[in-house]
Length: 214
Image 1 (cartoon, helix red, strand yellow):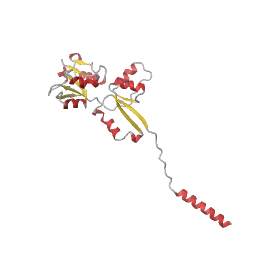
Image 2: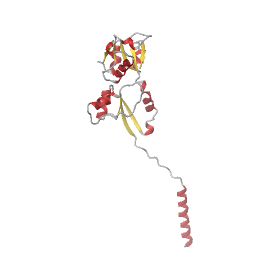
Image 3: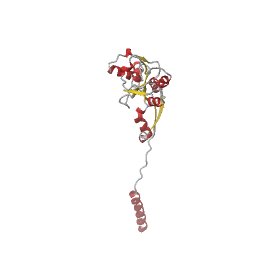
Image 4: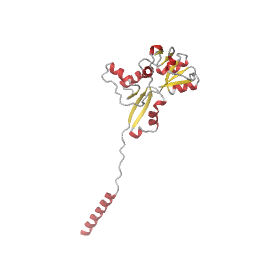
């Protein structure tokens, strides 16, 4: 009787030792993926860091699924954020300033900067090897809507060059997204564009020269 009890206890002890000695498999805790929709004001090679991060899966490595929507116009991007259609708006800082000045209680928050400078080009209809901003005096240039970041950057460039903006016919009547088509349609002597729109137009030889970068 004692032997039976001894053997039973021995078997239980052996089973316990084997169980304890087995490596515990760590169960992978799958973190819930967070989906974020980003409203992009324009598509440009100057925002390549964002595109690379998405394509290389850097966001997925951190359990983020990014959906990128093109929403032309900073005002439309800010409206999309306020309505909840997108969670993050990728646009110029002026959109958040305008929303704040309009008295919105749930105003936009600027939390990151993707580029240090705006990559804007001035395109002319004819090649100008010795182009300077002074070449714009007395000519018409289409720059996008008044108060938009591209137009503000252009005005700042004129200021830094000591040029009176009143000496240039600055056309604000065309939205930035429509500038390429307007220039191809023979509006303006010059146009202020981002790449890759500037490169595409130049390759099609609607204009012959990318004459200046900010």
